[in-house]
Length: 138
Image 1 (cartoon, rainbow, N blue to C red):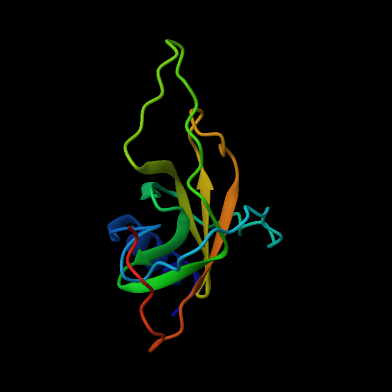
Image 2: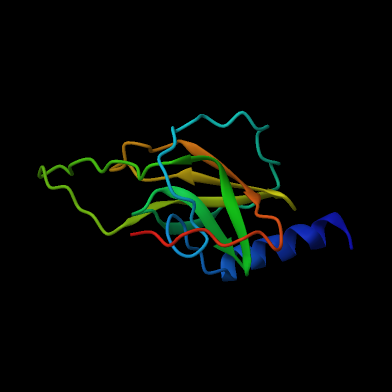
């Protein structure tokens, strides 16, 4: 399969995927510090797909097309900032974009001016098949 076809398949998978993060049967428990990504910059041909990531239990896992990905550096949910009227809105999600960097690296970038984490990136690696499920978020 050619590189252009693989990229097209990745884009379709990202665009069609149901994305869940932070809670569920595959979410690790416990606090973790936010860490800046030390991974290389994404391939310029990689396509960013807009998503509203469920983060009310933190940035910990993403389920993408049936595959579970775990944050390299799990983080608490980003704080919300007030809008121009001084109102803080909350819906349990964080707006951003996902980029599949390669078969084993996924990056989420926060793209929300009302998030304290706007512009921050979080890298994810696949959870090994057969790994035990993590506790459900409370």
